[in-house]
Length: 379
Ligand code: SF4
Image 1: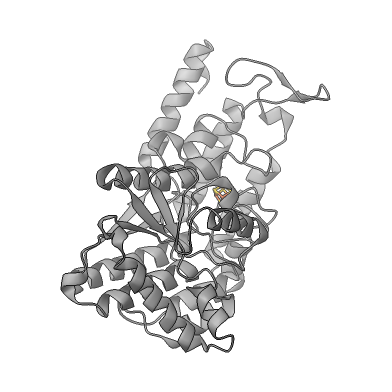
Image 2: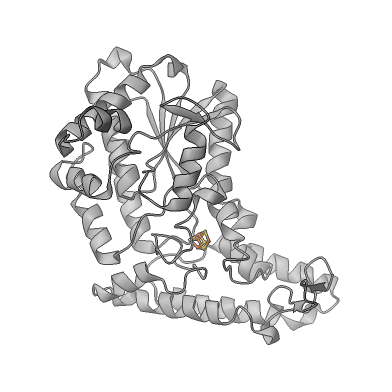
């Protein structure tokens, strides 16, 4: 759509671009692929909010009898999301769900999570995975890609295929751009095959909107599920952050753990500094300060050899190509120290940073590990 609109009329107004976007969404919704559900990756950020807004407007503009294609609005919760972002996401998805029910839309609002044995805390504190960094970014796949991909795969197997609707835009970043271009070449104008999820196709209705156009539309329209987009705009102002989009593959995750400082995990040690939590603190939300300090500490201990085991979890000693020893996971003592520090913050924090079930799993992993190494008594 966006490309066609711009080619036809370079001077298109933002209002015209928005109308064309909604028209394009309608055309695709009513297309022959109608029997396949739409799965909208909803992160609560500006781009996926705009896509969901366009879908609402489209549904309101067609006859109820035409609303036959099911739509899933799916958000992922890594369980270590920035708490303020999570609170915004919870509010908006509730509003979307209520409005969809009231309007009789064929819409399901869903939330995905990492598998219970693959959460950030279970892997880091339980199994001792070192704090993630650029070369060992073990988290993105487990916390983001697998949960969302799992949901899509279930819809593909239930319906034969599924269309994933994403709020990606061409101007987002170079690596995301490359990923988009590669896919565009694979299949026509509107839909492209997902290269890792057979039966899944991708539809990107705002591909050619520029960032200022996105903000202009959000700033001048009411949220169709009620109210305005003011809280979203305020959230960005407070965080000075970008958007952590719904992630379906590693090369699509440039903002996940980069200095772009997206609305990512508050625990993210891949970034140098967590600018978004710092942004909230700078905006007066001082209760996030202990989280920033904890994250900084977690990053600082990553390469401390006194806190890492010599052997990997598989019992092997590992060396790099230069013969340098690569340490194994955090020692049990280090994991316990991380746990104790986290629990200290949790005590005074209004909100859950780690769940009871994660704590149970962590204790079980420690006990199993110590039993295997024959020193159960020390924890
Ligand atoms: S935001 Fe950081 S911690 Fe979270 S999945 Fe991405 S790289 Fe990992």
